[in-house]
Image (cartoon, rainbow, N blue to C red; front, side):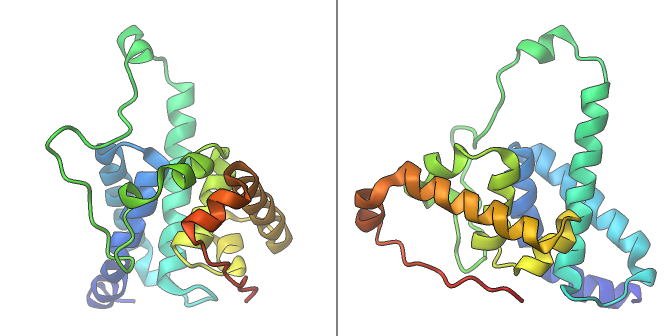
Length: 188
C-alpha cells in the first residue's frame, strides 16, 4: 500500500488505537508514545501489508500489542531509579484536564458505571485486554487471536472466564440495575 492509502486507511482507526494504547499504558503520555511508535512501524511496513482476515485495524492492533510488550520487557530489564520506584502511578486525567471523548460511537471509559469499571479492572491485564478488544472494540474471536498471536480456542476460553468473572463480581442484582444487554458472541 502506498503512503496515501496508508494515511487514508490507517488514520481511520487512530481513535481506536489510541483508546487501546491508553488502556494498556494507563498514562496519556505513554499512550501517545505507543500510538506514535505503532503508526511509525506501520508506515514503514505498509508496502508489505497484505489484506488478511482482520484488515488494517487488526494489523494496527497487532503492532500496538507488540510495541507495548516489547517496551514493557525493555523496562523490566532496565534499572529503576529510586525516585521512579517510589513515585505514584498516574492513572487518570489531571485536574482541569478533560477526559477524551472517543468516537467509538461515543464510548467513554470515564462514563462507565463505577461498579462495572471496578469489576473489569479487577481482572488481570490479559483478561482485561481480551474483554476490551471484544466488548469495546467489537473485534471477532479470530481477529483477537491474530492480534495476540494465540489460538482461537484460547481467546474463547479467556473471554469466557473474563465475562464470568465480571458477572460474578457484579452480581445479578447489579447487572439488572445496570440494564446490561447480553451480546451474542461472534465466532467469525
